[in-house]
Structures are given as structure tokens and as C-alpha cells.
View 1: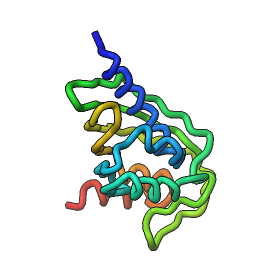
View 2: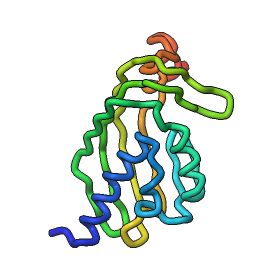
View 3: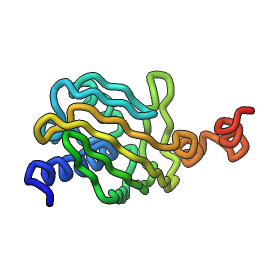
Length: 154
């Protein structure tokens, strides 16, 4: 049986995943602590303000977003979610200070896992894992041969 706090944490984790794709920062104060620490293949943040800056760079990059979150497990102060996202790359995507990928119109699919730690009902730390090579291949930045070389450099 889940407690009301566990249900709120699960709902916040699901919403945080949706917000991260859309780049919507309006809900960040409800979802994350001020001092949130976060890591993914695409970002490292040490505060909610840094997270907002990163997410704002994604606004308009993807449309027609469909996110599926498989059962979320909340145990103690941790939450785990497996997810998949399908979206159309419709606008500029800022990958880093030196690389912006213009809209490709490609339909991308990405699968991953998020691990979150909570303080109360808000996320105080998160780690997201996904196949960065598959993402780059989906954007058309890597060919199949290049992707194989990156996965198996030997």
C-alpha cells in the first residue's frame, strides 16, 4: 500500500520527466528543491536555477511529444522510473555552447531510466540514463557505422 507522500512523489517524478522534454520551467519550484543536483548524458546541474537554464534551451526543440512512464517504484526517499519518449525534432536543439542542431523534422524515440532522490515531495537529486549514441543517430548526427564504432571502439 502506498502512502500519500509516495503517491505525490510518483506524480512529481512523472511530471518532472514531462517537463524536462518540453523545457517548461514554470513548475520547477513545485518539483525540485533549490539545491537539486542532476546528471544525464546531456547535462550536469547543481541548482534549480541551472536546471531552468538547461531546460529553457529545449523550448520548441521537440513537438508531438509522447511520453510513456512504466511503473514508478518509490522506496524510502528514492524513486525509479523507466520511460520512453517519441517526439519530432521541430526546432533548434542546443547540445552545448558550441553545438546547435537545427530542426531535422525527424521522429525520434528514446528510452531511458530516471533515478530520483526526494526531500519531502520534491526531487533533490536525479540521474537519467539513456543511449546517447542512439539519440545522436536519431538526429542524423551519426551514421550506423559511426554508432557501431562508438559503442565498440575495439
